Length: 259
Image (cartoon, rainbow, N blue to C red; front, side):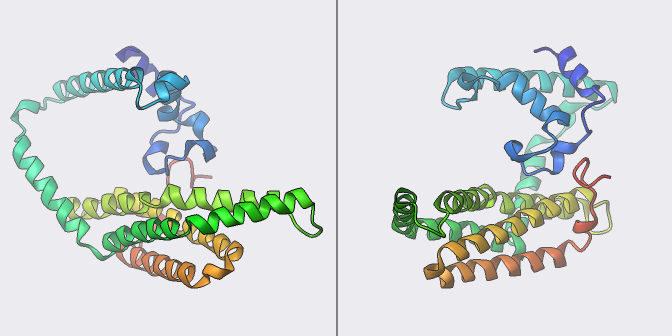
């Protein structure tokens, strides 16, 4: 791929500008992959199994090529706008970014999101035997064809819930940290649309995680206390985010929230 191909993709009217900026990166479940330039670029470069393998040399070669082309385009745009990239104090910018990151990590919503990630890790770490027993139970139900039992449906529901929980386990923290960093960089009185957009994605992840844990509570009633602890933590996190970013839900994500 060359720069002209990248520019041609960017100019394609079928793509929704910025749709990839406020998504959850779960392309397999996204209704807008056909209108996402990032997805199209990914499929064009990493469409085969070999280049999708992060342990394969071909993957990193493709990724390196995209980085090189993107950097060239950034330099061209900077030159056209009269921006001297060499005049930027990289060390000062790096120090400022590190300071911003440290402040963001200390905020209540970010700390709570990080705790949630550990709660997920600990729960599944202690529930390994429980999940194996549930699998054996459902397999036995399927073999015996017991009446009033739907082992295939229950297994699918549990798997779907686990997939959702794992997908958002760390992403909630990442999105919230980006949102908080945005407010720190821009200041409270400046444009905070990007921060609100990131916070909205985090809220969506929190609510989907709450729904998934609700399903887990239904299928594993013997774990109701530990799961309720997680649900309560997520609900507190949700309310904390809504307080910190009161305009987040009103943010209109390109494609997803447009009529």
